[in-house]
Length: 120
Image 1 (tube, rainbow, N blue to C red):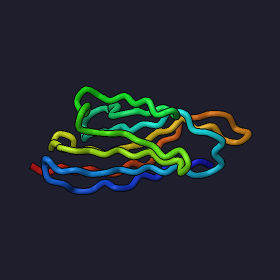
Image 2 (tube, rainbow, N blue to C red):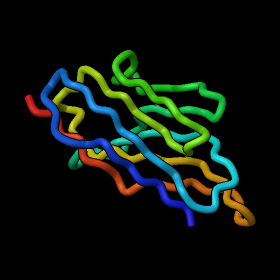
Image 3 (cartoon, one colour):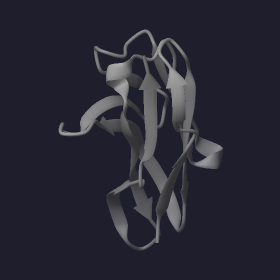
């Protein structure tokens, strides 16, 4: 069984920074793409950033230049450094990973989410 566990959320003032972490564990053979998504109250879940196993990254236009996604393949962990946060970025942040398990093939797994609240 694969699990993704996020951490690092919390309350921050507008203009502040937070660093989210997401660690994958379980019977992992390999991890391909990993990413961060967010869902604000009453809104659909949206892509924030993704990164491939060889480090290529992609960002939503709204966060480009302020957020940085990175990963430590040895630790099966992906990070999201968020700078210059805005109140409208208050949301639950989820990580996801395309994970191949031993003897079970590849599936997309999601974490349980971590709350980020940006006060004005």
